[in-house]
Length: 555
Image 1 (cartoon, helix red, strand yellow):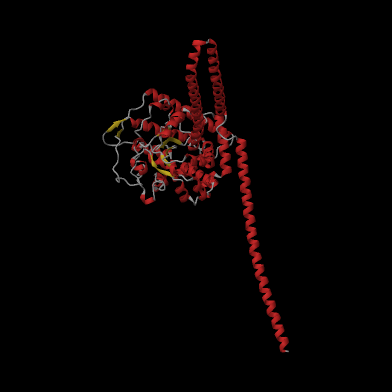
Image 2: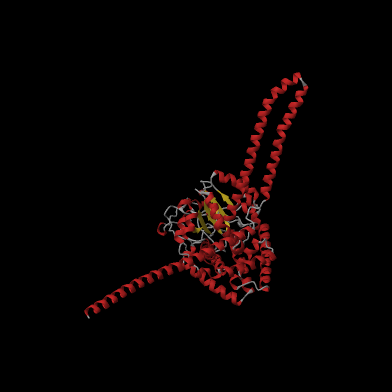
């Protein structure tokens, strides 16, 4: 695939006609620094690959430069930690059956699930990454769990990720003529019932989050949360300083005026109408059910499948030569794109006319426009670590917090915020009572001061007696808040195991009850048949007796 990308990149050169703004070529110092970082990453990936081969932990299907690099990024390029993560991933894939889940598993209830949990892929952004959209405000967790089970939904989720890695990313790479291994996510939180979403997070999202973080790291590029209310934005600004700056830079929280921000990174024709775009996908029953993207183009998918077959042959025959081939072609594609960027003029961003484009146009001879969206100053330090392998510019700080992690973070921050707010309110009430007491005591104290100095000492004692209990209560309250902060946000592993064992026992009992019910049903049917046979036998006996009596009378 990388070879074909490099060939198409060198032939087309990403050249566009017309007036536009010129993209400045990177400075010589930046190019030299980026080249040194790339070489260091390549050496780390090669060392990691040799370590996997020595430990017999590198199946042919996972012998991919970018896959190993994703796992290294997830562990800070620490080879020992990455080897442990890699071995656990292989063990999980064998136990879960992830290698064959695309062929073995069929999710027949997909239409009903999409009705109660609207989500799906729709188009690509200006850099060619697939766009994933969820409408959390329309999620109905109770009805969702009536049309499917937690286990089947998790299998469906794993199957979707396998399709992303096997089909969507390669198709986007062919269409964009650069390596694509991340995606852009949009979460529409308009009308969200956070209590119901919290229940969904407890039942499903926590398990999905663990699967994604352990086995599919570094596949997200940016997360946009749109239609966020003022309270949600205030809460985000509060907890933003509590998380990793590299992670928070990848999360963008927007209100109801988000259209311009989304249109900076996604073409209007690629954005659904309910998010401010021009696409409706009326023929496919809606944008989220259309699965629109380059992966639906037969010509692109044929090239993807042919490249997969050729890569399998290379894996079986070359080994380390194939790795060197991938790195070399990535460098070649990168050098070509950098050289082209000196002479390329990109057209100014314009809004396409409504209805002027088809919903499924992905011509190989019309590459996707290069993104004009520039990083903000808050992420300037991160751009120094950008990876340009395959002609891309995917930052090392790719979003690690998935939706479930973000929801858990929000829930924890909300609880802390409420406790601190209650503490402030309690303190305010106590101080107000103290102020009222002091106002009432002060005239008495002044009048008594003129007559007797002993009363002044008494008033001073009353003040100390009034303030001291408040200070003690405030201290106890602070200790309680600190103790709650020290408690872990997640359920302890022992309790989680106990809950899972209880659920397994309940499922086993339900299974036994179902079997018992079936046996009782069969027994009752046999009893009915036996009663019918007895009735027939009685009727036959009566008829025989009557016949004997009649013959006897005749005789």
